[in-house]
Image 1 (cartoon, rainbow, N blue to C red):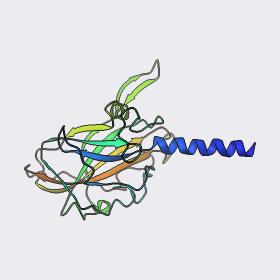
Image 2: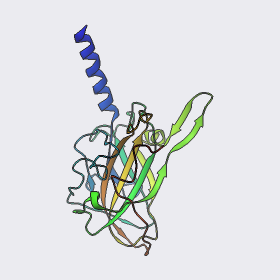
Image 3: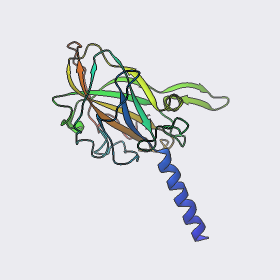
Image 4: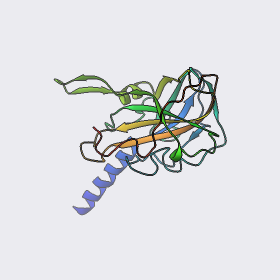
Length: 218
């Protein structure tokens, strides 16, 4: 009996880990993708709302060698999958009913290959949440469902009026399947190192991670 319970518990843990995911690829246009400018986390485990690693995930303050160069106002994409290097479209990008919004932030930094996300000022540039809801059938279509239907890709437009220079881009999924309890929201994020050309002179107000969200946010 005890062995059966242990096996069942382990199976549940494996299934949960397989449902978790990380943002892995960046698309500077609609034909090219790369994973050279992402600060990839060491695992697909979620981050807690008040965790010190809320900015760019575990080890996310450590940069990588490459930057991705894009123009202000251009349309770009990020791509999420459950396991590193597995871009199979028949596998959900994030599974296990990990439904919730997808949010994109930018932070202006001096050098995106060395800047720490934990001390950066982040401003939101895009988000998508609950897209459709049918209370009668209790059918809900979230941004994560749209991402799964698009083989893990999330497409958005960079602001056209931000100054040129280096930025960190923070892509985040907030899974709400256990968010009925305080601190239950699960955060999955990766940061990308960008150099943005063109643009203007706007200076959006920013927030810090952790700190932008609270444990009691609805």
